[in-house]
Amino acid sequence: MTAMEAIKNRRSIRRFKPGAVVTDEQIKTLLEAAMLAPSACNTRPWEFVVVKDRVKLNEIRKAHPYTGMLETASLAIIVIALPESQERGRNSLPKDYYPQDCGAATQNILLAAVELGLGACWCGVYPKENRIAEIREILGTEKLPFCVIAVGVPDETPDPRGWLDENKVTYI
Image (cartoon, rainbow, N blue to C red; front, side, top):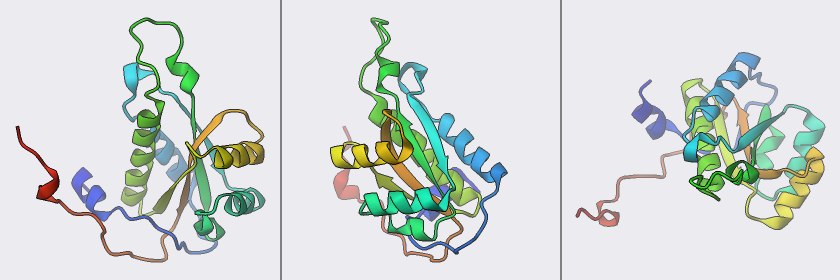
């Protein structure tokens, strides 16, 4: 599958086959894809929490209003942002690019999932303070949860929702 095919085939999957297994090898591939994302000055301002525990998945689902798909997802990957990694005192180091960098890592997970025959759905946490607080409590951390990505074997095939809109392009 080419990169463009993965991009065109990517969908936000909200229904998964209950009980389907995502292998440790597939999880490792998703995490590798995430960590290959570009980041400002290669600061890699991220960590990842893989949640397989059904009790924790249900807690996240109850805390975050848009994660209902965790009921049937095999797991969730929570992207943790590390803003402090871009504030280490190097004068030339760009600050506060972690949202872009974590977004790139998240998109890499979504595209790798397509290539692996999996489905995924990106559910934002940052910058909503109440969601941040609730996910921190569930994970038992003070670190910054950026998003929750539901992962599993798709049980739906949504129609595409994106397209090239030339009216939104300016050539200079």
